[in-house]
Amino acid sequence: MLVALLMGFACGLPLLLTITVLQAWMKEQGVDLTVIGMISLVGLPYTLKFLWAPVMDRFTLPFLGRRRGWILVAQAALMVSISGLGFTDPGKNPWMTAAAAFLVTFFSASQDIVVDAYRREDLPDKELGLGSSLYVNGYRVGMLLASGGGLIMADHMPFFMVYQIMAACLLPGVVTTLLAPEPKINVGTPETMKEAVFDPLIEYFSRRGALWILAFILFYKIGDTMASAMTLPFYLDIGFSKTQIGAVVKLFGFWATVAGTLIGGVIMLRFEINRSLWVFGFLQAASTAGFAVLARVGNSLPLLSTVIAFENLSSGMGTAAFIAFMASLTHKKFTATQYALLTSLMGIPRVMASAPTGFFAKNMGWESFFIACTLMAAPGMLLLFKFAPWNPQKVG
Image (cartoon, rainbow, N blue to C red):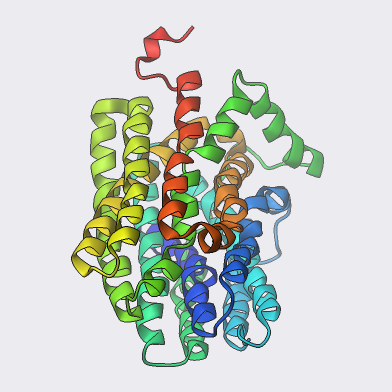
């Protein structure tokens, strides 16, 4: 369980270093909003990681075993690339910064692939729920340190130093990898690349409604994701300081998200996954509309706190149901590659839909932009009628 927690921390830390912290750095350097929005494309590896996941299933490195060897390589490369990102200058050469950020996301996505596989193989089925919960909590602590801590530090030191400190913060993950036991597998491993690549896909797409489920994964959180992509420049634009953002949005918001995840888990015991997806989906859309209200009112710390509390609570609940739903889809024989495929699809809106958000926000204005993001929740909710109706017994 401790390994799950610490590996979650190592996976969560890099994510917002190429989103929130990088956006703040670029905004401070005077980079155009459209470019800041386009920089979201460096997150493509999170979307495409299923392409090289089979390689990590098929081949074993000559040290530390099948899973830990790949994790260690990814972590070492990640530390070097995060440090290197700090040496770039987004004001003078934003595309060099983008290239460095791309390396961070590639190695981060690679670490995610193997850590997910490690967790599935290391924990028995009865402990997988608790282990996954601790992994998610560790992930959020890593995100909190990178975004909240990073933004607060950036008010008192150059961004260059922030990135060097963040690279060093991955050391506990490296120590965990070196000390953790290698999972014991009884089902065998893929003998060929063909087996590693095609068998998981054939198993999944042979299911009824497979394509509708993939469409749902793409659209369920798209409005929430598009709004989140531009919140940092939005907060700065309406006059909040980086310390206020770090304290209220990141620190306070972190605990609201943790609470939302726990509440979501309790509600799911009563409502089950299908109904939870409906309830939490509507709450996510309503919370996105809260940003439009904040855009109209302007710089108000109490309203910011209220909007953040509601948004993070609903997002935490939605994520809890979403992850439970995706976990229920994976076949145990192909968990690593199938999970990489599903989480890659989940990441597409964060990357592709986020890219033009700066353009939309610049040309529509903040209030209209957030109203449009609220309406984007409709496709995902409509797809629930197809395979997750409120009353499952009516299906057929």
